[in-house]
Amino acid sequence: MAGNPLTDPSWPTELADTVERVVGQVRERATKPAVHVTRGIVFGLLAGILGIVALTLLIVGATRALQVLLALGLPQGRAVYLSYLIVGGILCLAGALFLRKRHTNDQ
Image: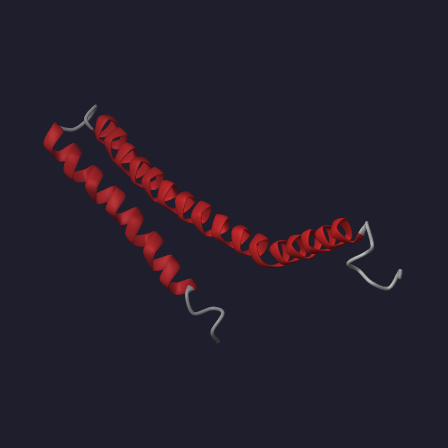
């Protein structure tokens, strides 16, 4: 009776191997892409937040450095206002450049 699986001594191990293989394939196809997408979202958000913080600190540091440089030849109050005007002007020009390039792909 080789056709009867209940009397075959290797049937339980073959069945267990088959179930393990099928479950492994399902897990690989279902959960691995979800894990990769989730990691991408988490690391992307983390990089974005750290980038915004770094850019903010860079702008603050540039403004302060410009104040120190301008204070060498101007009074402190004028150096502060002039540094704000220079950094603000550079940021406005950068914003205008980005707004101008915004519609290049649409046309």
